[in-house]
Length: 473
Ligand SMILES: [Zn+2]
Image 1 (cartoon, protein in one colour):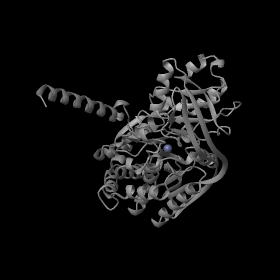
Image 2 (cartoon, rainbow, N blue to C red):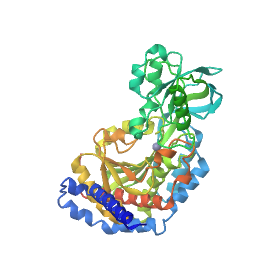
Image 3 (cartoon, rainbow, N blue to C red):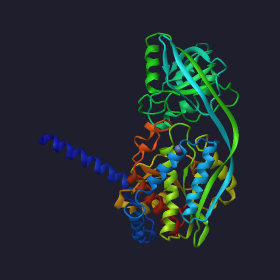
Image 4 (cartoon, helix red, strand yellow):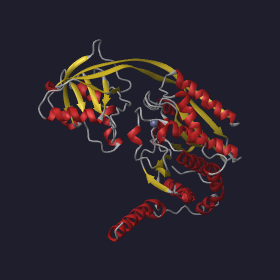
């Protein structure tokens, strides 16, 4: 590399390093003073190191990936309400019991059961082309014989509002939003059908909510609003959405034929709960969690097999190392997350009178790539304490604290009520490439990252469950 490029490279690296250091120093940035707790937290350094060594280079090395691979190879996709989901819950309970975890129980939850049938979209005009499709759950089917209609391309909801109803009535709305972040863009999937139906559309399609595609449609949850006709709704690929938009922008009409079938009923599923009972305050809970259900495409290895398996690993590691914290470490495998956080809402309702006992709630549902720290919701006082705990993880580069108002999916059901909580911060830039698509397989996961994630999850839960102070609200 020529000298001037080397110099430029070094400057860039320094800037990036400096940026990272600024991010990490939450305590300094916010002038945190946690008093004598700081010294107490430092005293956990050896036990944290022993958990890390056991998991990353000791007997547990590779175990989380191996168990995840066995799990997804055996069950594949696990959609809410399916028998295979219930079988996978039984399997996880068995794994826990084999590890001598004896406080394992389940709680029944009534869940939606949506089953995708045949789905087919064909572009008829201006030329014939098959369009890859994934219906959004729980979409209604098309009428027998399907729907044939012209497409109206809509870039955003403002454009939809500004379009006269008569230009939309009887047509298929295709949303082609520009992907910014998942959080900002996903509304076109979740609310698109309802808004299009309110203007008289007979079906709605959305450009898949992803920044990247190799011709992959991405499914996901959508919710019909009250008092609108439920219209069939589906995702198509970035490639086809852009194609239709380009043709449309040139003033040519695009006509599609859509056929979708599906069934919908209710079933009983279960949230799974595993406790390492606390030695001094068994009623107080530090919760680690992930969801066991997945979409019906791919294998749900990433969403949320990784989060599920590190949340099993946490109690297993603590049990194997004979570590009993003062508070209970509770691991929860949520059911029916994908169909609207149904399991988490049921748990919150059933345990509302004990909600004061939740000291801290964690969830991993945004990937288990290389872990970096936590995204934390709560008061600044709470974050300052968590930032102090995260300093124990310098050796594995997991000390970053990012502030957020919604640290997870399921756990927002709790954190919105003021319960402090956190999500796993990880190098998940590629997460939405695979999310809710056939691409969500074990090939996305990596053994070393899962080892680090499992070690981090177990050790953070242990320290917070064992230290003298509760996490303030
Ligand atoms: Zn998920």
